[in-house]
Image 1: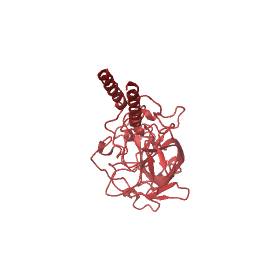
Image 2: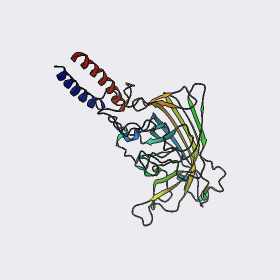
Image 3: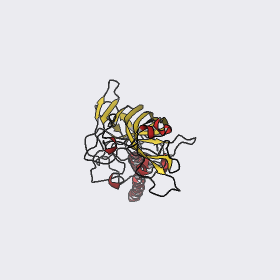
Image 4: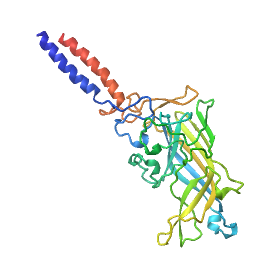
Length: 343
């Protein structure tokens, strides 16, 4: 009889352990800044540990001059152009990973989306979302989500696009400031979608401009006294975030489809002033718990770990690493209970 009980116990133990460990993400590395792969319903856009702030953004664009064109030769519609564009936005403030070189306290990027009656669905974005320009802009980012074309890069280190200073203010919020200048890492620090401005020759050109922020004084701005490098200031805590970005832009219009020549010609070249203002509130559903107790930001990993009922995946039956840990504890308790009953 004892042998039979032991056999039954072994069978139950095997089954319970199998169930308890079935949800483990074998590729999860707690030393890196990526979340588990098996958090139910977690889109690629929210792959990283950190805080995501749902926001509104205003972008001020003001014409300054057209390269190699006297002011009185520029049409009034463009010469007097100034406009404020409004967007829905997400400010992603994230824990640095092993793949991030340098000493920045966080990595961050700002995503601008068109304001439409139906909110833009971020879950539809692919892994290469930074380069999916359809109606999206990324005015500033400290690191590329897919550096070197690698999604979840391992065993490689990629430099930051720029460095910044982190301080903690009296309210315990974190303040980041920097002036972005060209450096050895010559990659972009922003990726804009098309911006609409007037054109002086609508027969040849559309009013959609390819648009970029200047991080170096190029040929078109060498003699421009008002040129400025991009200045970034951001403050965030566990509830809200604010960001301002001031700089200059360079833009060229797209050619009309019925005209011959390259889609974007060498002229006209438009230069002007750019300002971005962002105010956001933390998205608890997609954000980990930010600690304000240290001089640099840090996060308690809660998304996918069953420790925060506000997070995505909490209470789901097919979730994450955190559920694997909880399942293991419950498995052990169940095994002990079965053993007590049988013996």
